[in-house]
Length: 452
Image (cartoon, rainbow, N blue to C red; front, top):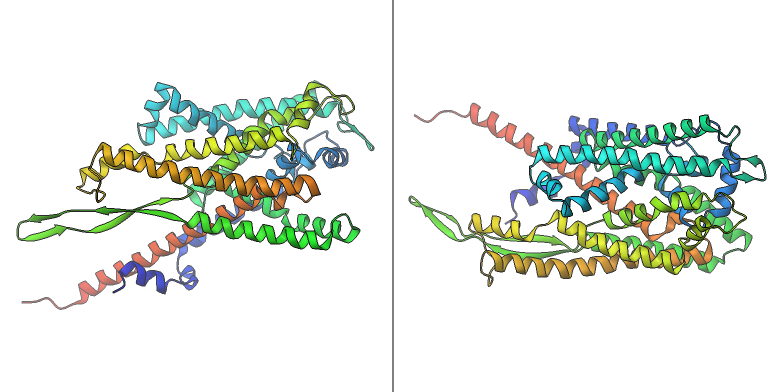
């Protein structure tokens, strides 16, 4: 016989959305915030010639700057107030999480619950400002020396331009950080992920048109375009399959007698995702690669081979250094983030506290070791899957000039964020239907005749 949850899931439909007032408010707030973000990607930084910037990015867009422009939704190519996007905040989050595992005082804050989490978030914001200032200053210095066919990128270089550029770019990043937190708290989905998602999706139509144009001009064969689009569909199918894959560990609760009644004796399972870290490792890896390359890509003189230009060339797509660093960072963050979100010792202790046990495994430390072994194997498979999805399409992009928006990283972000957002919408609908059922049950109980 189907459970109440299964019956509720079977009867769930989007018609419930019309009655879920709270969910509709959250969805409209999320859409409004994303529209504000997209409008901001067209507000230019004062004193910068957008035509020259577009020409320079077209010349050097095959490397790390092209990927940065993809994450910013084209804001970098237009040099707008959101040119840095949310990347400084992600970099700061990585550093704080790494330090919280190594610095005892930060580790203590992490264990203090809500108060400690707020303190760590405050440290993350301060570090975001510092990283954004560093990146914005590097961009301002680099912009002053850039020239294209249309002239200089900066109309009036000098200290006033540098300060105004830094203030504008840092202010844009801080606003996006605040906007992302508001979406998470008052909207639907993870705000930071949705901002990156919106930037990628907004330029997908243009990327598709550019790919078809390459086929029309003969730069790419029709067969290759069809093959590449099929690869993109296969990547999407693989992402959906892996992100929904679980390893279910059986958990048994013993029977216990309380008075004349028996409780417990239930058999359930502990679901462990194959890719516990989700889309975090590629985003974190890309962010760390973008942090030093932001300055490196804006070489002081593109015609001369300085050390900045050497770094930018080494971090271009398809280069061995870029591929090796990208894969190494993905693997590292897959294991690191999994260790952050799932603690085998704490889970084993909670099971032991409530009388639960894994059949064939002794409670306590043996259960924790078993969880750790299973999780390590799952994470190894998940890290291999992330490397496969993110690296293979990038090789095709670097060799054939297909836009970044069809790369494995962008497709992974799009599919994962979409699935996560849809899951949150469904959870809100479930909660709304449960509230309706409980309300009806209470009304029915009040109206029923009392027994004498």
